[in-house]
Length: 138
Image (cartoon, rainbow, N blue to C red; front, side, top):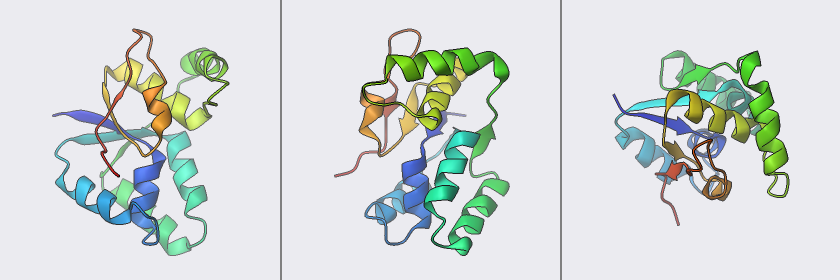
């Protein structure tokens, strides 16, 4: 089964009906055929951004609990790599959530991401490659 990373933006949009990307995220994620992976820092970011509505937060967490997204932990052994990434991209800047996704891509050999964040057009993995953003929006 195809695996793809998912960043916070599309998940926030999915659960926030007032988000300008809500409809696009809904259509895209309903039609996506593959396994979605993310990290706990991304889940934390989504919950924080949905803090305007407890129901939106709990709906998001229920969505995770039914297996819509597989959430991966950050192992202590990759913290050094995360630090290197954050330092490398300090001019962007890169946050913990984004760095955790780059590390997850490196570990799992994933080459695609679903993101609203254009910073993924800048970040490179250990092989010098960008993650291909398959979430096209206008």
